[in-house]
Length: 441
Image (cartoon, rainbow, N blue to C red; front, top):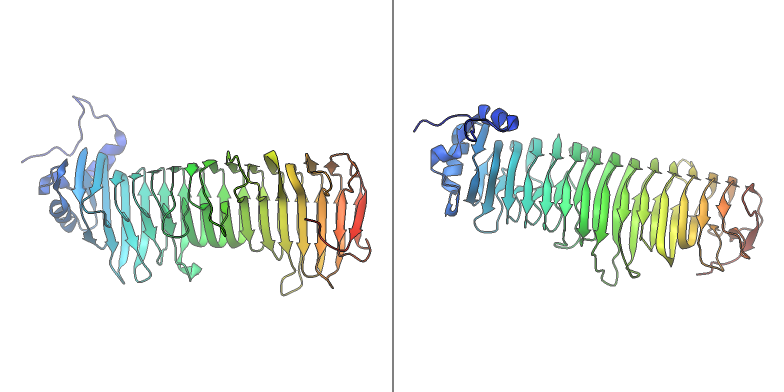
């Protein structure tokens, strides 16, 4: 049968992207016996189209194609108005161990798979690209916990998927996961899976997660990354449905890395109780957290564990119901070379018992808390608390220009300090401080 290479709606081609995909496709699954009727098992026909493609694009016209596991090395699937539905609830693509896999998906929808893309430690990939696709009712839909040279997941929609919706990179060797980009995706009602879960989990060097939106999150993580040189920007999390167990907490952005920028993100949990929630949690060095809006995270807006080079600037952290948590809580220590630098500037913190708490377990130098607005806190507690472990010392500590809520409480608590030597407290709306021997909770 002669089949046109152009998709036609009436007498007009209606989508230039479809023309491009179709012109570059070597195979049309209908030519190999696929039906796309939503009932027939189309696995063998799809496999036949892939086998003759030689890694070139395989095109799916509009329809619903029921499919089981496909045997592939490199693969390029594309379409428009086409859904590939799971035949048996298993995986669609199981990457071949030890092979240099190249995987591309464009413009397709996937429904009901355990894993649409499945790669483990034994597999290798030259590149992975998933663009403009939809995933619904899938478990771990894009799962590549293996060596990865380049990955892009862009402009996709994940709906009612559980586990890690996108997992990319090598879990134990971050150097094997490089150039990972996850941008412009929508995550609708992402749910808990086996153990931890998140919209996105990435491992590697050179990671960008940007312009994604997550709504009604019930897993225990929003976005989670480990590695080096990570940028998390312009993402939004709206409404969290997480129900914790006795030992867990929800975290919006969780980063364990050296070299991070977390900027201009939005978290609005809409929580109405004291569910333990943290907006941003970082563990690493050389981090900047700037321009984020965090609302409703009652355990902490920002929780940090850092050694060297942490800047937290111009964030807005709000608990709409006054709570007993922390706006910004940091546990910091010098690195092996004795370096330490910590700066908090221009933040707005409202509705927390402790607006700012800094815990130093080794000597701390070059700490600045400047031009922050710390308001609507609980009576009987300070706006800023510096806590020293016994034996630790500080120097070059400046607390300047902060706007604090007037009241009878000292602005600053210096806990376990022998004296205020090395600490300068000036030009705040209230410069009072108190040296204490223990922490009041």
